[in-house]
Picture: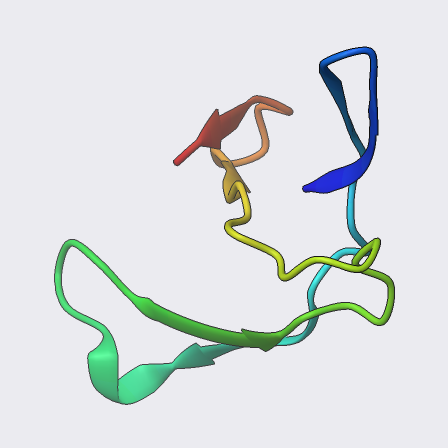
Length: 66
């Protein structure tokens, strides 16, 4: 998300994490699931365009980015 522009460079900031994250059980299939959430309170003045989702693989301590 853009927060300031200076000398032709766009400086990016991170918005607050989403809140009220929940699974939409009716959208679950064998290979996917549905999620719903609300944007965090602080967005830097611009709409959040996307989030990155990571999940932990078992108890390995490793995460997979989707």
